[in-house]
Amino acid sequence: MSKQILVTGGSSKIGKEFIKLLPKNIVINNPKRSEWDLSKNKFNKKQLNLIKKSDKIVILHSKLSSKSHLKKSLKDITDQICINLTSIIRICEIALSTNPKARIIILGSESGLKGSYDIIYALTKSSIHKYVEERKIKYKDQQLLCLAPSTISDGKMTLKRKDKKNVKKSISINPKKRGIKSKEISIFIYKLLFEITDYVSNTTIHINGGKFSRM
Image (cartoon, rainbow, N blue to C red; front, side):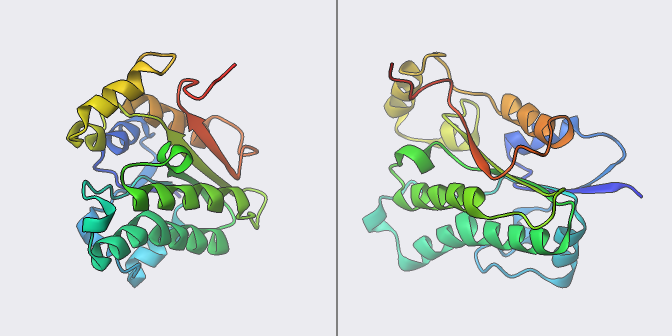
C-alpha cells in the first residue's frame, strides 16, 4: 500500500519545492485552501479520513495581516487565530489520537520568538511553538516538530511586505547576511521526515543563521 502525505499550504513556495522532492510511491494530498474551512476548524468526513490516514503531515498554512492591530475587526482576529493556531492544533490532535505512525512538521516563525508588527500572527506562532514542545506523543513511532525560520527571502509573505526597510535591516544583522530560501526549508523538512531519526521530537527548531547569537 502506498504511503500518504498531507501537505496544507502546498501552494506556497516551500510547499511546491517540498512536493518536488517526494518519491513517486507517496500519495500526495495537497488540498487547496478553498477546500478547507480553516477559519471555522470544520472538517468533513473526507478531510477527517485524510488526516487519519496520512502517515506524514506537513502544515504550512498561515495568515499574516498587513493591518495594524487596532484596525482589525473582531472577525479578522478570530479568523487569524483559527487559521494560524486552532486549525493546526485540531489537525494534530486528530492525527496523534488516531494514527500511531503520524509524523507531523509544522512551519512556525521567528515571530513566535521575537514578535511581529502583526501581534496576532506572532502570538499564534508562539502558541504553536509551545504546543509542539508540550504535547506529549502517545505512540513511540510518532513525531511532532516545529520549524521556526527567520526571514524567508523568496517567500510570498516577505515579498508582499511593505516595510522593505525592516526586511533589509533584518537581513543585514544576520551573520549569514541573507535570508533563508524556501528550497532550503523544503529540503530540511524532507530530510527530517525521510532521512533523520524520529527521535527528534517535541521541539521547535530555530532556523535563523545564528541571528540571535550574542557572545
